[in-house]
Length: 474
Image (tube, rainbow, N blue to C red; front, side, top):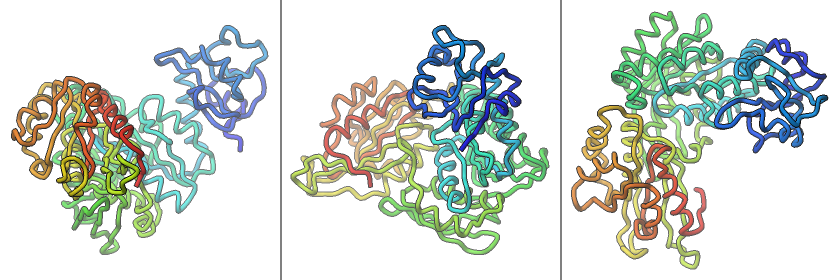
């Protein structure tokens, strides 16, 4: 199915097509490009123009460029524009304008990608649904997601993030959502803001792009909920609150039970129950917010509640695996919770609660007594109070249920030193040093959580644990 013709793309961008062409997709990466894609030569770590020839050799329908790169034939199918990123934005806006899709935009300090995937899972059971396959939520990810949207889409889910103030509103205005959901506000990217209220205001700016009569789905339980609600009032958005403090989409009970979450809620249409196939109170909150979003989009929230059990967290965001350490012995396994993609105090609290909900297996392995083990890397971008924020995690209510903590990084040293001596495992300067000791850090029967900011590279420990045996995803 044709996504872009040379004529339509030229009209959208004001560019010049060197010949007629038709593209079935849009790509920015020659490693994953598909035959028939329009290759967008963005400038990032490398200049995409250096890869145009390769993209065309791999079957790209055309390339979006500012000039014909050296080595590319004169008769090559190109769309020549003044600025490639601006042209990608133009394509995104044109794609948004030509569809009748109901659009949901999602932001928040924690849980954006998980919520996006929840929405994709449930909405795809009710109509043709479009969402990015990865966490494409920045200045190029949002327009790329929009540019890839087919005209006959019924529902679109757009994740929007930020690294600095002022980034969310323009992306939301590009997406023009009918519904905007804010998962929660937490201490993340604090180094760019004076306080958490500043983060709340930046996240609330997703409401700037709402269509007329649009709906704001807001977390009632976050400490900055009043900031979000005041912002929504100024934008004259319809407000729908979710959480324990909400009177409409009220979270009444959450039970974590060995890899599952059982949720009870009260909704505008009465009591509702749903089950998630993974553990996490934060996932329960996001699930409730997604159900409220579905209702605002015109989808069936009861059907969505039944379908939420089909959702699984993306890799690195709380997925559960069984790692078989000795294939000859059925009980020689450990449970691995891979949550190594992102971390801040709020998400770490949620992860520790999940770890505490699991029961380790006794009478296997070297230690005989199964343990709950947390392997933690630094939480980054927390600002001037980062050391105190790390140390304060020792007071988390789930900490007593964790038998052993292994920590990596200078910031996580503060947590390590604040823990009781009998809970201190190994501390290392880097995740790579911890990874080299993996075989002595964990054992059969353990339930192991690995969590840290992506930049802490604690995912190296996840890879090392997997290499200890033969993983089977649960």
